[in-house]
Image (tube, rainbow, N blue to C red; front, top):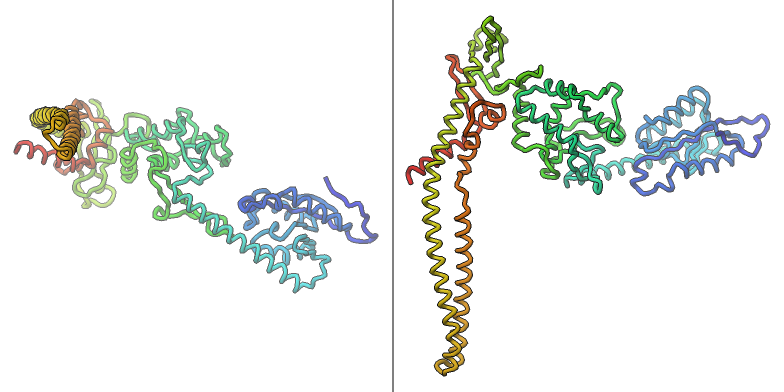
Length: 550
């Protein structure tokens, strides 16, 4: 609704079509001055100023709420410029220069060039500026506006430094400062800086890691998620009431980039990772990506969704850039794990179809891709490879079982001897305690009979009490040791690493990822297996030698 003055303008006097420009930014909230800078307060002040100018009529009001003054890419301000260009507005009124903006060069250019060229009258009430009637000459007005704008910009710069410092301090403390939690988490209701598990989304995160480690490719996972009708993280947030900005092209479907970023996100093992991007400076609001070395990572800040072992296995497979099952069929068991023993490159899976069946094998393609002399055509049949690796792992497990059998007998023998010793020693200490108590009981009658002086009685009583206390402490320690010996585990922790797969009858992707780092195929068709748990196996071998020596 247009506001018109009660006073009538003088005849033949120009009537200005004014715009109230009102702005409130987040910084105003942060510095605790929301009352003086509020939208309603600015509107009230400008309405009062308008009453003092019978030659000005309000044409429209333009409000940018929650927008920084260091940028001029503001919705209402851009609309104001459009209306100035069309001739609808020829007077702009603000409460003070900081409402127009906090970039002194941009604000000065607007007033001295843009407004002047368009014939726009500019009024800033708190600064006493009215380009049509403030009585200042151009030089004085330029200095006054310039100094004020510089002060406003220095405030913006200072505020930016303070805010960045506060945010970095929160990051270093492991406090979450993002607008939206990573998919699989949500902000705690009582503390927006703490993350808790979002059970519904967390199940999807775990499924993605499981599928990937079982041999599915990223594309295969994407296809499965979309086929199941599971909304992607953006759509999920929107469906759960979050004010999450949506790209117009977002159709709720998953893409390879989203899945890959999830597989690389350390947030899922309980680490708070922040500082992926930073604004160029307080004037330029565009962001630039930060290298991994500059990100802030605080470990153990929230509940993990996957184990560290699972996460780092996935990270290693991503690094190898493996290709898995893309069409939803059986995952490729050895994907990213078999390499050419000569050139070191990952071998490619090939399939030949014949009338008698399907023939699958791995082949080194370096010769085809580079030059005929780069390598030879190393090949290994998948069925034979699977049989060889299964036999190899069974051999290791059988070796661990043999060791465990001998070690258990030795431990049982040692345990029995230790238990018998503790039992005998405990009985001896208890008998001595009974004798000590009897001596204390007989001490008083001896003194009463005059066989001991009072000083001798007190001295012997103190000595016997100290001995009784020492016996009680020793008996308690022996009882505890005997209980621990009785409850001691018989399984060896090292051998147990292998024995949990003692009844293995076929290879699975998780078993391969647990035990095997790489498989090398040689030109003669043989393979060499490099264990991921090589140190564990060597320690087991060393222990077996020690067991035999004992």
